[in-house]
Structure formats: structure tokens, C-alpha cells
Amino acid sequence: MDWENLWDVASVQLMSFGLKAAGAIAVWIVGRYLIGLAVRLVSAAATRQRVDPTILRYVASAVTVTLNIVLVVAILGYFGVETTSFAALLAAAGVAIGAAWAGLLSNFAGGAFLIVLRPFKVGDYVKAGGVEGTVTEIGLFATTILTPDNVTTFVGNGKVFGDTISNYSASAWRRVDREAQLAHSVNPQDAIARLRTALLNIPNVERDPAPVVEIIDFNERGTRLAVRPFTHTNHYWQVYFDTNRVISETFGAAGYPVPETHVVMADKPAPQPQPQPSLPAAGTAAASTAAAV
Image 1 (cartoon, rainbow, N blue to C red):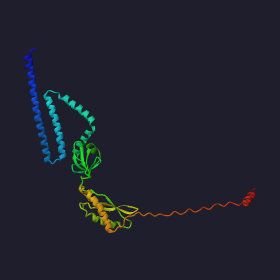
Image 2: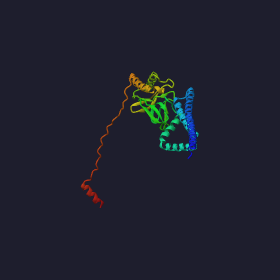
Image 3: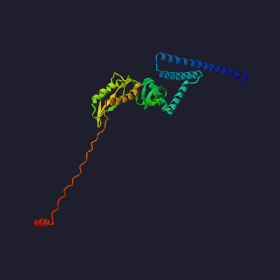
Image 4: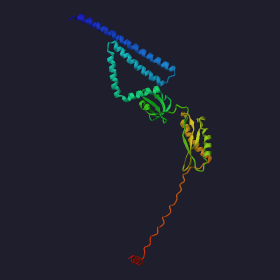
């Protein structure tokens, strides 16, 4: 065996592999730097356009993952690896992972739709996925909602997007629905006039549209009023409780009686004895029989 020729061939191969490895490392370093630069440029451009921070994080993550995959495929192609086979392997792995993580991917897809369609944004007060509260974050897989009792709740994006979404912050105002019960002796128009004036004195109640106070129904205690002031979502619960207080104070100051249910009990008359049929006497019955014969 010619060891000298073998060493020459091995030296050439090692040198070639070393150069390729060094080139791959250089490509990786430069590629990572360019990926970071591209993400920073995209983020800066989106920031200048005042894009929502949630969208910024979502786009930055998607761009980083995509460019890293392209970089790895390019390096493998540089080493002579058949990239079509690698793409098929990625597709097969994607199918397997998708079957195993169907729920997780459903949440990821739901997050993508939430970002694109934007039924709500961070800071909105919503009811989504059966949870009501203020949205604090829209993540890749879950939406974080802070409930009114200060509980941080994580709801899967798939459930959020697949369920009914109520966005209470989408409009400029929200209606507070309350009711007031009157006694039979109270004039409803007098109560309506008093409540309309009192509601306008509640802080954060909208003047346009003006509060609505109207007769909504009648029952055994008297007239029932619908009391409906309007306010911004941020002040909903303050106006809600203040409306209850105003109803109580207004009716108390007016001296309205407490609504009571009146039930009239009638005594059922005693049953009268029914007259019994009288039986004929024995002699009369015998005479009647003889006459018939």
C-alpha cells in the first residue's frame, strides 16, 4: 500500500472538508447576524407605523423561525446534502407533529387568525372563550385575560377564536341595565322624572345618549321601571353600583312606600246538605201494587 499517496488523498479531503466546515461556520455566523438585522429592521419599521406590540412579537417570531430554517437548508445544500430529501423529511415530521399536537397547532392557528382579523386588542374588555375581563396579552398559543376579580386567566386561542367573542370596548359607550319596583300607590311618571334627574348627577354617566327610564312591566306589587344609564366601559361597574344607590336614595327621599304583595284570601262556603228522597209508606206501596194488578 502506498502510504504517501493515501496521505496525500486524505490531506486533500480533510483540507476540502475543513474549508467547507469553516465556510459553513462563517455562513452560519453571517446568516444569524443578517437574520437579527432583518428582524430589527422589520420591528423598527412596524414601530414607526405604530403597529400593535402583540403583532410585532408575533411577526418577529415568525420571521426568525422561517429565516433560520432557510439558513439551515442552505448550509446543508452547501455540504452537498440533497435538500429535496430534507424538505420531504420536514414535511413528514410536520405531519407527525401535527397529528400529535393537533390541539397545540389549533391554538397556534387561532392565534394567527386573532392577529390578522383583530376582533380585539390588548387593553380591551372582552368576553371570549367563556372568560370575561381585560386582555393583557395575545400570545402565540393562548390569550391572557385579567378578570374583574383580579385573576389572570390563560385561554387557548383555538377556544377563543372558535367561540363567541364579545368586545365591550369596541364602542364608545355601554348601557347599564337596572330595574326599579314601585308600589301600586306611586305615580310612575313622578318616579321617572325624579330618576332621570338623579341619574345625570352620577359621575361618568353619558349625556348623549341620555339615560333611559321607562315603564317596562307590571306585576302584583305595582309598576316596574327600566333604568338604563350609559357610560364608557372603563366606568361600567362604578355607574352600575351608583345607579343602585341612586334608585334607593331617590325613592327614600320621595317617601315612596315599600312595594308589597297583597293577597286576598276568601273563605270557601260550607257545602249545603242535599235533601234526601222520602220513601213511601208500607200501606201506600201495597195499595199501589193492588191497583196495578
